[in-house]
Length: 87
Image 1 (cartoon, rainbow, N blue to C red):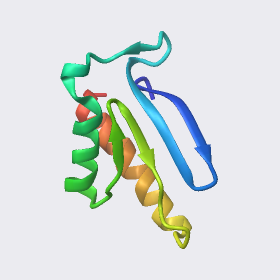
Image 2 (cartoon, one colour):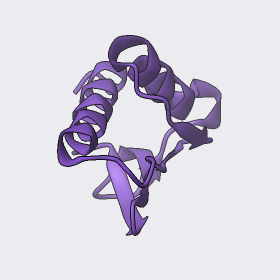
Image 3 (cartoon, rainbow, N blue to C red):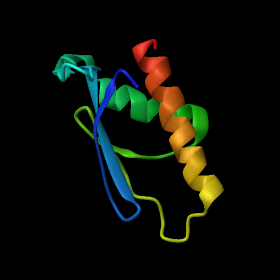
Image 4 (tube, one colour):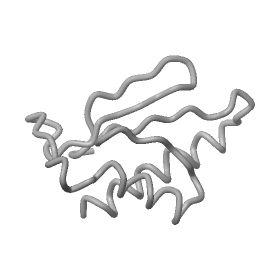
């Protein structure tokens, strides 16, 4: 996605950065609050609760999560990023 960069994971924990332009690495202005907006959209529209630190989203599902629940998290994140960034 054009606004997702720095994907990282360790076991079930994962995270990524939200940026204005992933190819160039250009960040959003902190005042835009993109990370918070994406996390709020995920919570309100999909019931997925995640943590954000600035424009970095962090995912730590329970160890007993199943494949369909992981897919629900991924789909919710994709929809939220698209809705908030307009892409």
